[in-house]
Image 1 (tube, rainbow, N blue to C red):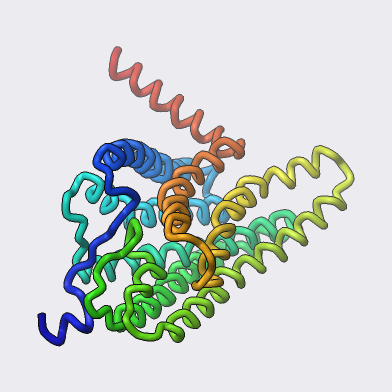
Image 2 (image 1 turned 90 degrees about the vertical axis):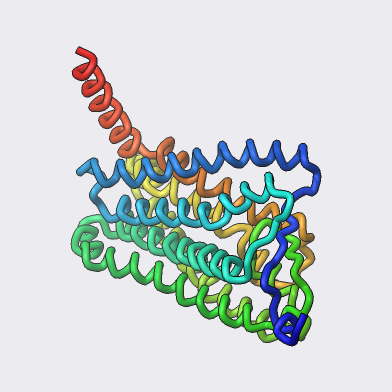
Length: 317
């Protein structure tokens, strides 16, 4: 093994969740179903928003972006994890590991910024409804969406670059389900203080700053809702924000505790479970949350199903 192998490994091995074969087969079956549900739910949300003219509003434009982020994030992690459940050798090439880290980290960052953008959209809708169409025009919505995608991508490019410049020496076993940032940094055989500082800084920028903006938006929203005289008006105003607020709690919660303190007391198993939560559970639940709690989305579903039923009857006739 030459000098090169003292700098990086050509391949990493992901230790995953379990080494027991029966457990891996069971997990493969379970996560295959959840991944298919994630794909189906998010793709249908995007198609529904595209096909129904009533959903061509800023709120649903951002929701379609969120669904694209969710399905892409899940796809950056889950297929490789499923393949490893049934593989004897759980190796991942160096380049593939770097690519997985780049895409998963970038999409995760994009989602956090996008949720802050969606909170601003709800703030304008509730607190300044008369000027909402003027403020949230198409050009601003497009710029906000592009900013979300770019901020996540730029942060990920920086983090991936500095992480894979670390000398890994002979360390190649990643005790995780994927090439996750903290798990890869731990492989380094040098001091990683500068990387940990970079992780904290990026967490403040892409986690805490959007989270604080979300909090400020909802403080103003709740204050405005409480001033509404009619009970029906308050219920309607709160209903427009309930789905988004549920998703915010799901997405920001554990990420803050994981990345704000890279040397926290979280066990390796806890980190794996948090990654599973973001890769599988959150992308699967988001379409359900927005569908079940949103009258407009449910109405669009019913309209689409009615059209499909009519088409089926015509073809059968």
